[in-house]
Image 1 (cartoon, rainbow, N blue to C red):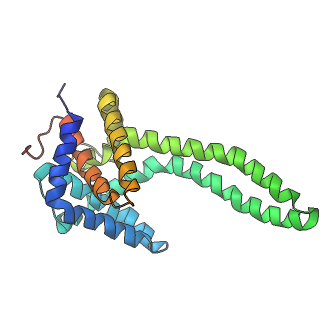
Image 2 (image 1 turned 60 degrees about the vertical axis):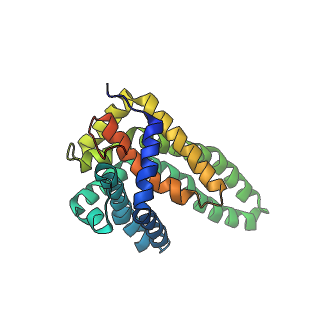
Image 3 (image 1 turned 45 degrees about the horizontal axis):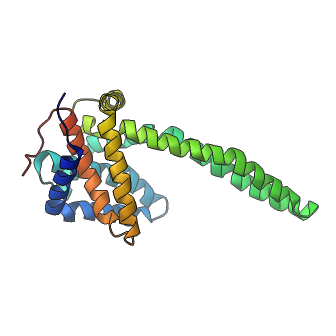
Amino acid sequence: MHEVSISQLWNRAWDLFKVNWLLLVGFLVIAIIVSLIPYIGVLIAWILLSPALVRAGYLVALKGQSSFGEAFRDLSSLLKIFVYELILELIPGILIGLKYMPALGSAIAGLSEASMEGGYGGVSGSMALSGTGGILLLVGYILVFILNLFGWAGPYAILSGRAGIFSAIGQSFSLTAQNFGKVFLAFLLYIGLAILGAILCGVGLLVVGPMWYVFLPLLYLALTGEEGVPHS
């Protein structure tokens, strides 16, 4: 099996980030700003900007450099990445959404019953929500973590031309299962770095976040035996 050092990959991601920081940070900042626009902005960020950032990170890992224009050049691949991520997030998204949907009905019912019974209906609705709704929320977030842990490699299988949307799911899960220790360690290190970045007034996330988009394709290229950009 191809030997992979997670620490060396993080060092390479850092070196590549320093060369491409304007591209990567620019993408992230633009996506955040656009997503603040209600409805249409969120859709643009999700459908176009997020997949383009994934492609930009992949090209940086593969060739050493990229550009905004190159990241948007293959719209077909961007659409495939969007659909892939939509499939992965669909089930946990539904579960998380179900936690909040009853809240609206509970609040409306609570207000109505409170006016008739002195407020006890609102309390009972809140208690019911904290039970079932809390479980749905927990299960949803656990699924988000598991699906991201096992499905992270799918977009790079698509970009490399090795797989279509659905076969990329199987390839990603298989690749992660075969290298679970290394992948899990990589995710734990990212979580630790993200927490550290958040502590630093959130500014550190502008480094850790973009680096993650370079680290993941580096990890994919290493685990699949592709060479990628030479180590300097």
